[in-house]
Image 1: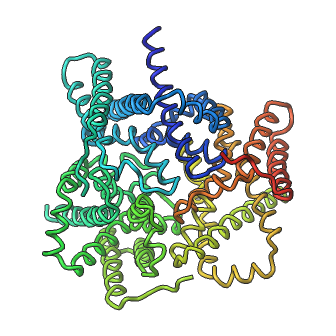
Image 2: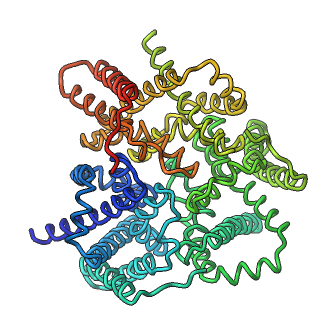
Image 3: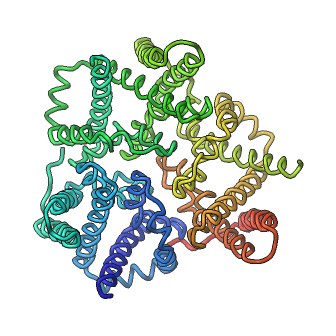
Amino acid sequence: MPHVSLITIIEIVAILVGAFSGFIEARRKRMDLVGVFTVAFITAFGGGTLRDILLDKRPLFWVQHQEYAILIFVLALIASPLIRTLRQIVSERLIVIADAIGLGLFAVAGVSQAQAAHMPVFIASMMGVITGIFGGVLRDIVCNEVPMVFRDGKPYAICAFFGCWLYILLMKTDVPDDFALWASATFITLLRLLTWKFDMRIGRH
Amino acid sequence: MPHVSLITIIEIVAILVGAFSGFIEARRKRMDLVGVFTVAFITAFGGGTLRDILLDKRPLFWVQHQEYAILIFVLALIASPLIRTLRQIVSERLIVIADAIGLGLFAVAGVSQAQAAHMPVFIASMMGVITGIFGGVLRDIVCNEVPMVFRDGKPYAICAFFGCWLYILLMKTDVPDDFALWASATFITLLRLLTWKFDMRIGRH
Amino acid sequence: MPHVSLITIIEIVAILVGAFSGFIEARRKRMDLVGVFTVAFITAFGGGTLRDILLDKRPLFWVQHQEYAILIFVLALIASPLIRTLRQIVSERLIVIADAIGLGLFAVAGVSQAQAAHMPVFIASMMGVITGIFGGVLRDIVCNEVPMVFRDGKPYAICAFFGCWLYILLMKTDVPDDFALWASATFITLLRLLTWKFDMRIGRH
């Protein structure tokens, strides 16, 4: 089934991007293996876990799919050479693209699950944004930093927010659910890449 | 129904005071719109949300009442001019009074819900204090500060603690439940204002 | 029943060790009574509470046993003289031993509850480690520090991890459940003391 495979591949890419962002931040803080694994894990799964706790949904995604935890664990064991190698063969552009794909996927997964749980629409859009950004927020809190996404003025959460509303609106029309999902996730990814390309900022208060 | 209206007005005031405290702290940290909204939201609803997660109570208050989330969102959009204006027309005294009302209301809401969930009495009093203070605690953690309420030596949590015990004791007598609620909330507010007026301190360790 | 008594005594020791570690850290941050109690409480119960939230298990241990919360509250009132006295009569060696016992007990309690909740084995081992170390992690986050267990390079979480796997393997054999529990907890404690004695390190990344 190529459809399932595509989702699985995108899912793994999104999780790996989260994990690598955690590896890099944990290394910058000179953490040991335990810290590198934990921070990577929190970055990859923190947003979805917070959403599921707020919605009281169990089992958690990573509890059902222990293969992802094991994958991050194995990668954490080789994090140092891995990051060095990746930095040589992977451009910053590719990391931003992969991260934008992850943002779209996570946010739309969040808003769709909140809608399925009959949340009011504004709360559902918040759940989408939380799923998209709170992995990074929790990573920064554990690393003793003010969360980057709250202070860099880049429209990251805002791209997720608009895309969640696109999803909510599409679900009120006759379009198939699958189309609403993919169109919204793609919209978030493209909007994120566009704002990155033109280095747009939202006003700092 | 004037009774319901009064509770609703007090509730809105308490939430707004929490949100403004978040606005001010987020601005001090030079956060952008996303940070300003999130920190305000966490300050206003963090305590009650933590209590509900610990008690496993759903749906969360703000999930049921999305109008509060929308209100904070709209205010976050105009946070900068709003804070400037409020600083000119609202005295510090008024902010402290509003905050003391919020503390009383939140703490009593917390202890009463914990009692309704058949928690043991000491745990119920802790749940009241958590509801009253953890919005500010989570705000400070997200803003990368040691929580103010843990270190300023001012009897803030302690006022909530005594008021929660007053509520627990009153509920063991024949007084109507409503009286116990309002008397305890008023007691916390007055005790907080009294300790503020006379600048009392608890011993620092 | 001497068996129950032994568990209760070890449990109290483990909780007290967590609380004292919280007292010491809160004092170092010059916190007041509210901070000292809260940080001690979080250190003692944070790991188990996080595990129970992730597993959606209620009531929480400390909600069912309010005597432990009251005990920490009373000790917090006398934390300063208590710490001074203990420093004179208790050697660092004794604190490390008590802490190692606590690590073993908490980790094995975590993995066994996760197994009872039918978690996959790798997730169960993670739950054991979370129960053993996240009290200290949350303590450090509240105290605005990068968590010590993520950066000191000492094999603390790793001892818990290996012991959890020993428990998982023993439970697949015919040995009695009680033996698996005690053997694994003892293994963690001894392994922790051995790595402490020889000042072993895991590689920093």
